[in-house]
Image (tube, rainbow, N blue to C red; front, top):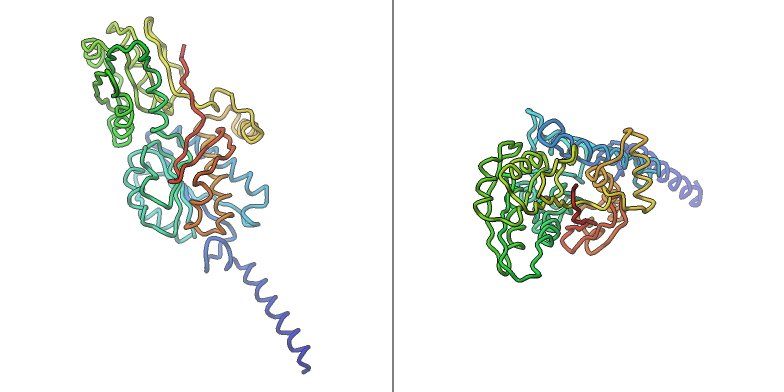
Length: 370
């Protein structure tokens, strides 16, 4: 056989082998040996337990993003597929669910909301071959883990916004009361807020309440004895209505400052003499008019028949930004942090700015609730 003909045949056979390998999925971004014709992304959310409504909103937003990514050709031609674990399922066990996803080639995870993120951000910090987005307000969630980011609202930013409610222009001493939900995330978020509040001439008193608490009569009486001018609420929003009710019954005349909890509807009734201000995203106020945000609103409403919440917007942004980060990093989780570090992006929620640790700040404001 002539040398040129032999080389031509070898070249054709090599090209055919490469084609067959690509069709079989061997070279897919999920990793060698993974024959799934999709790029799998993990999601851990409490879909049937506490805060299930908020978790469902996040997942709804993620589904819109999944559809958008795939309609635009996927990730370098590979279809995106979300793998979802319900962390509130009685049979759920993290290591088992994590290992199951890992066997499906999952290297990028979204994990929220509550106490589990406190433990997992430490447990997973040493895992080099994964990248995690924490859907958690827990302030230091990305601090010691180089394999993570936060595409979600941050307690540290909320704390700074809430602290700005205190008018210190008269130089007089301020009497402040801080109430936070009694769990690990609530304690951490309350500690940060307490730190930024306890400056200058300040007397700060702190207490806790249980998630879902409705009986705040004793708390109201204690707050009155402390002559509080401002009362700060840190929690999920479910307890805000009974909290305000009992403060009003106790005779409190001052300002209540609440964080951006998951629950906004129905709006709490504000007793006479009390001013309620609350952290809000500019997205939920309808002030984000960028094409990406308006398109998300349109598609969410078409899919679910209602306006999206801020939780849904963060869900959408999580999948969209992580998908872009994976492609830019050539599907190497160890290189994905570079996509976020010290960058700002226009997203459905509005502008999201990331620091060198992958933590983020969003567009927030303090708005009076009437």
